[in-house]
Length: 341
Image 1 (tube, rainbow, N blue to C red):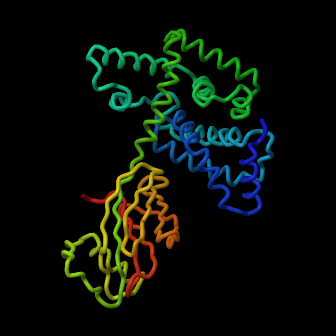
Image 2 (cartoon, rainbow, N blue to C red):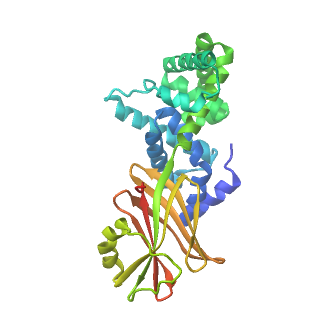
Image 3 (cartoon, rainbow, N blue to C red):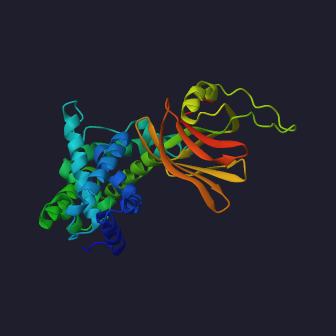
C-alpha cells in the first residue's frame, strides 16, 4: 500500500526541517498507537510511555522511511518493537506477556449495566472470565494477530508489514488463533472478545482525566486600584507560598490574584475561562507522563492569540507563563496540577 498523500506531504516537510509538520501525524495516529500499545501491555501508564517512545523513534527514523508501505504500518511496526522491548524488560519481574489481568472492578465499571438483574450480571462476569482465560492461553504471536486483524482492521499484507513476516504466515497464525478461541469460547464469543478488547482500550484512554488549578495574577510595581463594588479576595495560601519564585522571575513589587479557577478534563479536551481585559484563557492537557502534564495554553483577545504555548507542569512544580500588559502591570498565568480542593 502506498503512502497517503497527506502523510507523504507532512513527511517531506519533516525531512526538510519543518519540525511542526510531525505534530499532525502524531495527532492523526496517537489514538491508534495508544490502543495498539495498550492491547500488548494491558497497562495504561506503560501504553502511554510506549506510545511516546514510539513517536520519538519514528521521528528519528523518518529519513529511513522509503514509502514502500503506508506510514501507519511502518509506525505500527515501531510500536510493536517498542512494546515488545518493554515486555522483555518486565519479564524478570514476573510480568511476561499474557499473564496480567485487568482488575475485576475495572470490568464492572466498564461493562456491567447497573440496571442489570443480579443473575444477568453474574452471567456477564462469568462470561468475561471465560474470555480472559481463553485470551491468556494464546501466545504473544496469536494475540497480536487477533488484535491487528479484528480490532485494528489491518489487511493480511499490512499485518505482514507490521510484523515483518510473510503473508502466508499471517494467514496461518490468524487461522490457528481463531480456531483456538472458537474451541474455548464458541463462535459467538469470538465476536464478543473483539468488542471486549476495544472497550477495554477505550475505557483506559477515557480515564485519563487531569485535575489542575489556574491563577491569573497581575504583576505590578504599585498596588492595583480595587473596584469599590468588588469584595476582597480570600487569602490564597498557594500563591503566597509561590511569591518568592515569582519575584525571582519577574521582579515586580506587587502580585495580585485576579482570578482562580479549577479544571478537571480529559486529555485532549479544552477548558475555557474569562480573563480580565475581555480575554479568554484556553487550557488543554495534551499528555500525561507519570507526574508531569503537558498543557497547550492560549490567551485570546478578540481574534488575536496573545499567548500560545506548550508547557509542562508537575504537582510540586507549577508552570508559569508571562502574559500581555494589563493596566499598569503584566498578566501572569500559573498552572498547578492536581490542585487541592
